[in-house]
Image (tube, rainbow, N blue to C red):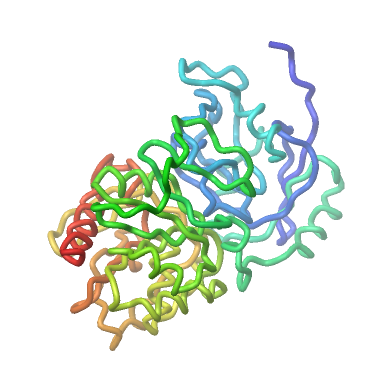
Length: 392
């Protein structure tokens, strides 16, 4: 393997803090909210999770890239991060499943990486002062100029990032494959087969997933439990959703400020009580807003694969995967009919809720991810059982 040219790069935060390093992946300049993820593995899933749209992600684990990239582990058809920050990039992966290096993958998709950054110092800084807007660049090596660009970059609060990641039309999930739209570019080859006759009558319960940046493993879990799974855009009209004759509705994960995603909030408000609803991550937040609750921005968010959550109905502690910067205000749920089902054991924030009378439930974390590894997969069982009862 030829030696890569060492190109200097900068990560500049809006508060004036600057980190120098060396580039890998694409070159150029991008801005985004600087955040950190504490997972020791799973960097490919992080990169391809649409929930990271608008963010520059720093991995706290020291060596990243050691098992390369393979098409089977993608959570969507492309990476979504604005930039990727690591302590040490491994340019020589050792994994029989790898089809390309992390460097090649990022370069192919125009994502800028920076290595040789003191990610421990960066993480402690973000924990102390909060997530903040940053610029990652190989073009501007003057620290003051880079900081000025970070201060002038767009904020995430109030910005509807879901509009940038949602699909462009209804699609049906077929087991281990997902037929993606032409507007989303070529689909990743994960054994997908084209629909022979989409949307024909089917005896299985139909679950419609409002795609706010859905991860493929959510669709996989629903399908494996016997559901017919159809994804629709975040702006899909209520009448068109009901025309699909759904037996259940999933509000998916996604990026950014939940209060900015007004189409989904309004849709949810109109559909509550008409069919079972399951909200995941951003979907959980939008459900809370639709029912009259409030959300707030966390200081530095929850991102990683080791977050302990207490499931109040049983008292069990589940190890969860998380990726969010906003949270539902528990006090604001009084009078909405919702009760808390999950609590984050690190900061006591809301991690789940359900309605006392209606078939409505949601969680802030990602139950489809294998952090525990299967601690929270029972939630899909509970939802599908509710859907089947509703269909019956």
